[in-house]
Length: 403
Image 1 (cartoon, helix red, strand yellow):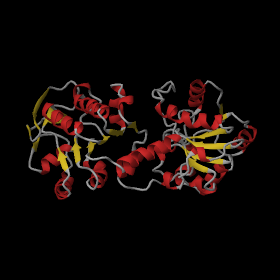
Image 2 (cartoon, rainbow, N blue to C red):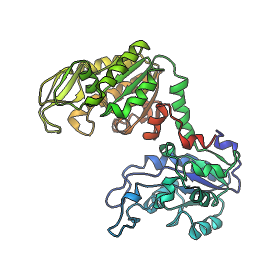
Image 3 (tube, rainbow, N blue to C red):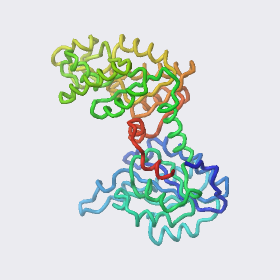
Image 4 (cartoon, helix red, strand yellow):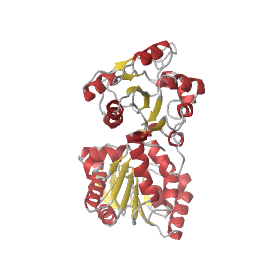
C-alpha cells in the first residue's frame, strides 16, 4: 500500500475513516480516548500539507439499540461528544453534522475550507454501512477527493466505509493513515520478520476463541505460553483434575492435537504449573494456590500462581520477539490479576533488554495501561478483533482494499 506522504494533499478534501468507537459513560463523557488520540498524527499531517479533513466513524451498535417504536436511539450513540473532545485535543474547531450522507453532508463538504475539519455522524445509523452497500459507499466517497483508512480496529469488517469505499479511488488517491500503517507494519514484523526465539503469550477464556491464532503460531513461534481459562481445557485433556475451572469439554481432542502438532514442530507449549484457585467466581471468594492439575472439586482456577509466573518470566526474558494477546487470569478482579500484571512487567523487562514486543487485546492492553508500561513495550495495538484475525493468517478486507 502507499504511505500517506506519497499522496498530494494540497487543496484536497480528505475522507479519513477513523475508529472513534470509544466508551462513553451515562453522561456521554468519554472514559478512554486512546483511539481518538491515535488518529491525531494523521489528521495533523493532512492539515499541515494543505488538505481539509472529513472524518467518518461508527460508534457502538445502533442497529441493536432501538427505541420502543423500533427507531434507532441516535441520541445515545451520536458522535457529537467526540467532535467536542477532538476539538479540545487539536486546539481548533471541529465541525459536526448529524448525518453522513445526503444534502447536509454534501453542503458541509462543499463549504469546507482548506485546513478545516468536519466530523460526520455515526455511519452505522445506516444499515447499509454494515452490509457493505456499494451505493452508500459511493455517497460517502463523493464527499471527498482522497480516501485514507486509519481504522485498523475495523479492518476485519468489509463495511462500506472501511472497505467498499476504496474502490472509488485510484491508487494515487487512497492509502493507509499512520495508525493503520503502524499496526500492519508491526504485526508483519512479528509474523514475517521475527527475530528468534519468538514467544507468543495467549490468554483468555476459551480455546475456541483462540484456536486459529494458536494453530497459525505453531508454524512460526518457538514458544507458546497459554494462560487464562483456556489453559484448563489443555490441562484436563492431559488427565489433570481441574475442579470447577472453566473448560470446553468439546475441545479436549482439539487441545491434544495442538499439543501433538507443537511436538512435531518443535514448539514449546507452556501451561501454568500452579494456579490461584477460588471457591466462587468472586473477588471476595476464599482463595489459595495449588498445582494446576490437582484442583479440588468445587474450586476453580482464576489466575496463574508463583511457579507459573517464574517459568513464564524466564521464557519471556530469553525471547527476542514477543506477542501478547489475552490475560492470564480474571483481570477485572483485583485478587486474580497478579499473574497478568507479572506478565506485563516481564514483557516490559524483556523489551528493555532488546526484545521486540507487540501487545494487543483488551485485558493485555488494560494491564499495560494500568501499570503505565505503554512506553516500555515496542507497540500496543488498538486492533482487538482485527489484530486477532491478522495473526490467524486471515486477509483483512480493509487492508486489502488499499493495495
